Image (cartoon, rainbow over all chains, first blue to last red):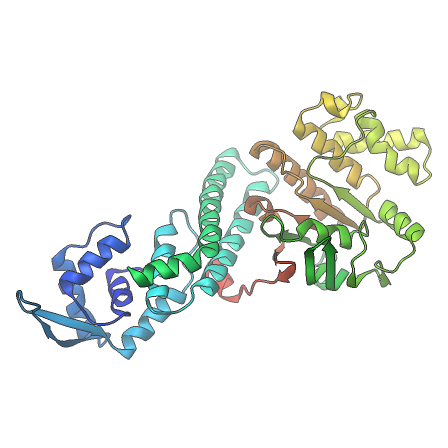
Length: 180
Length: 237
């Protein structure tokens, strides 16, 4: 299981080309407004770990009239790691939309099409909803179990509606991500 | 029903096409309903879901393609035989029940039996049993306009199942109901058909309703997409 982490998001942001830590932090906070803003220290620590693990490498420096900044770029291994993460189905559980959204955006940043991922994620959600429905409609099920299943079903349903709308708007989102 | 029996197709449609005026409702839709399964057909408004159901149930003839039920082609079957088949082998449940407003709940449920040649008395006895089963026996003398939406839909469910059909076609059966009434109707429907081994084609745009089904296919732009769920199952199981 590949967990959602800052490293995948940074690899997604690096998919479009070399960038330095300050710029990555700024783009992250703009691109994922629902997420907690990244701390500079976290960005630099994560970049160093990506370099250590061979997923990113230093691509020179850029001063642009100000202080000198180290540029980082993704390696082939980094691109492969990103592809693995964006294609992996998120376990269907309540409140997973943010991770699905992050995968959709990172897939677009890596110039790939997230439609297949969204379709597979929908199938996983439906399979989980079928299990929960079977649990709550089994003869003799107590009300607490029914209500607990209902809670999960309603949240998964909300995710599904969001995925359906997003799938229908992928063209616009792709254009927006690429022009931002 | 044993799981192996669930793989036997009971109704098969291949390459269905249907045009309404200038609109191509179906563009080569293929789908297979297996014995004893509940198959959900989902899709956006205007994707051709209801047209597909009408073609499979023999209500509408497709312009092209084939529909095979129990070894016979429905799309070329003479109208008289098709009508008999619909009456005896198929049950249909629509969004708004489509009960006859002038008849009581009891007479609405007894009607398909009487059309099949069963006496009024015997038909009423069986109709009472089905109303009882779905918790609406107390409404047997009421007309559809005098019942709540949920009660009327339970009566419609009794009418769809009273002839003990082999296949039930349900078109947005809970579309007009609130979530609790919807849950009651879906639970009653699924328990009954699973017990009897009846196959159900369930048209719905509601994921929570589709989750009562064994399998789901999506209709998009008049063609059927079957999801590949190998990876999804790995996560869920």
